[in-house]
Image (cartoon, rainbow, N blue to C red; front, side):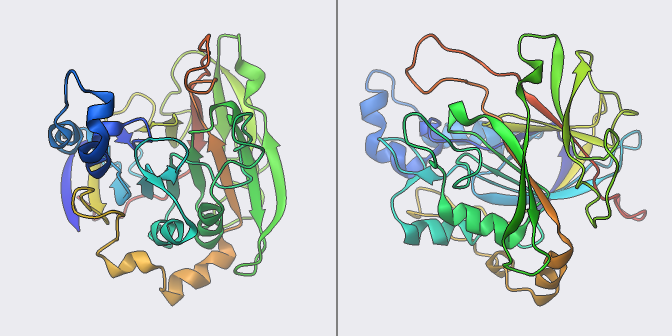
Length: 328
């Protein structure tokens, strides 16, 4: 466990093109990409891990508290991972079901937000290059197990989109409803692309999370103010920025997994809390009714396809739990 407090406004989760951030991969293959100017993988990673304003999620968990006196004083738990099913010769790839199971069982029970580079199988993962379900089946099973409030992914560029999953109230009961959310309404217009999970633009149903009513709405281009939403998450495929309007929140981090790629072929969480066997948390799953999945890919075309086209960032409005009064 790691705990510190500093200014935070950025969450960073790498992907398969961040070659130098996968130390094992770069040690073996870096010469094939950077034979003229080899990079120092440790130094590249240090740019992120040593920054006081970046929470770096390389298959790791964190608990963030936005504690600025002028901010929302909310908190959430988040897990981020760069790993993807291997296709081609790129970083952070895994080759088989056993590796995928080892990876995705590390998502802690009770996580509010999951950020993965790969999408779950069958959810925002339709690829003209790799087929209609290019995501990871084991990740989808893990999402069903954890039932986070929000899942942000990318990787499959053409599958940009969003959907709501309504879970069966019985643990492992599966999805009983899927609803697509239109993200294309803002294309070519001076509008922000916003997904509202707060219920402010839709009647709030009875749910422990209070976000069953999910619609995409168009807003003017000015930044969302602190009065407009409790907390806002502006997500792209590679990085998820946490903000509250124009506020400058403070964080308190408890990183749950810090495994060097130079030391292990696959990350293995040292903390037993990542093994997801806590009965109390499992019981709470019956009250987690919904998950919103967003493929927030900024690049609209596959790697190497010309001309390049780009998507707008997706802004997510979400209500978060309030920090305890005695938290400093």
